[in-house]
Length: 171
Image 1: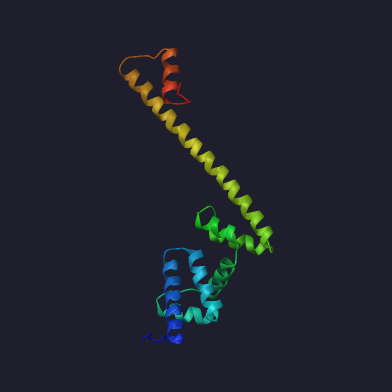
Image 2 (image 1 turned 180 degrees about the horizontal axis):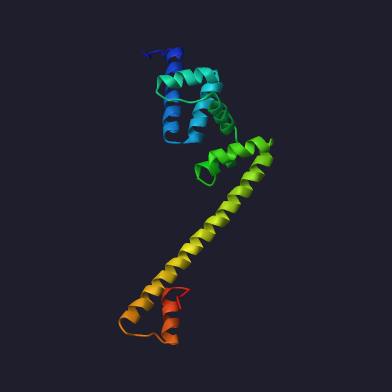
């Protein structure tokens, strides 16, 4: 014989689960995850921002009304923007700042794409600079070692060091 589950109990359990998820995501600074949980509480359980704050406080999670509204906004961003947030290509606060300036989804996506592309270029430059610095450090260590041994490398030896250790070498 099947046991009948009470829909009210199921709703309460699901609501509690979403509240705990919002708390955990907030605790882990996962603003997008918290936003989805909070928006679910608002949309599916018809909880007002004040109700959400009150219920979260029971689970030792403090959140303000403006934060609730920011979570609502984040939960509504296009999937592409959410993917950028999840992959740490942009942070949620930058997205919120752009939401205020760009009203349509296409404007928002276009602006976020520009920011992400610019950050990727900057990141590539940083990686390249680190690689160059590492190569220079290795080359300088080799040159210093040779000098400490009383060996002064010829230009040919310096070229070979360049070939072995990378594109750059210390003079």
